[in-house]
Length: 490
Image 1 (tube, rainbow, N blue to C red):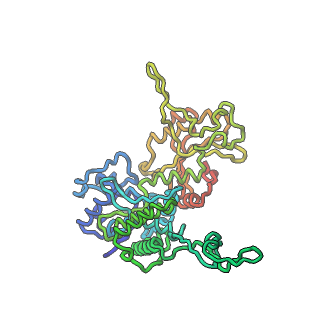
Image 2 (image 1 turned 90 degrees about the horizontal axis):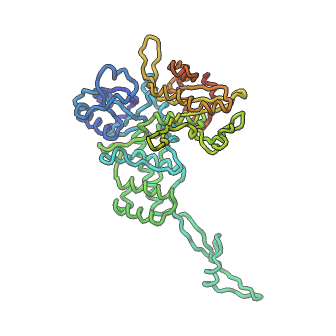
Image 3 (image 1 turned 90 degrees about the vertical axis):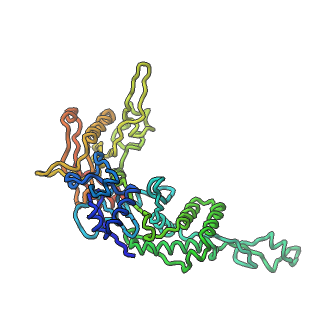
């Protein structure tokens, strides 16, 4: 079977012929390929016109057109995803849309993106997303399961069950009760002496069924990942630690029954997750490339949320910091003393609804992306950031494209207005407002500003625009470092 592995760009417009050419498919294969990807929500179809060809983002106005129209070819296809997708024997590596320079190999950039996705998706309790798509169109996510099992192995090792053994005159702890009950003692000076002592110790059971099963599955997973040529992209070493096959452990029903019984006596949370993952892997009986209808994925349809998270960490977001813990050059103002245990986000006013006989406060209010409060040369700065995953075109002689909408702009002004009392009460001298956008360039780009005169007239800061090197931001994020805001030259 021929395996085709290719790169495509997030949110770029492709025709059906483009996809057929890139992935080496005939018409029938292409239609099945498109249908399967649309089922799990990673491919959208939009109208085929000049405006769409020139767009770099998928906006709300780009309503997905029907499958009937899509099959006729009267549309363009857009990957709304960043990561790796395996569809039959086709491996689709979708790189982020800010990478606009054309090249044959994006492996360096994608390795870093994968590391970012790994950190972004990590949680206190590691869980596995085993299925793609909706309830009606679920597809077992074999790739995610394989990656989980291999990463888990390198972090925790092999599933081991221990057994207690009893020895005579061994090195373990003396079992006095067994020794006294079952041995003769020599009495001298009214003291008993035992020539043989029973001792006990706990050892790993190297022939344990589940240890061997785990080793077999890991070896099989490694083989599949190597066949897909993805081990380098994910930075995972493959392992060959078993010469057994799953058939050596009994038929599928027997293996699953054994795992179920082990789950009933296993109370360690991590081991339970591992056993359930092994159960799913064996129960689905899927193999990469053999199941032409199955979809395996590792990535996200919401890379904008990843960019927001990166910016929030790198610029030390204070939105969820208690007022009493903010580091300012002046003590917390008297009017905020009774709100010490409130977070910075909680002091934003909420809409008040008044009826003829009732007054009620809404739950929702303005929610900024990032608020940074810092001191530069003993001067307090209050910086309002909004992470925008946009490709802004703001050049002379070209039409404005890829820009945030008027709602995003007005809200950014209002964030400063929402904190005006807090800023004034603490004599914060410098307030800045800024959109943060990714770029493939190596240096920070001062792209310009956006302003609305009627809001500017309220003495609110205009919104500056900075394009940040994505690679640099990733390095800060992965090493959990903060960026000096002075580098932005706001």
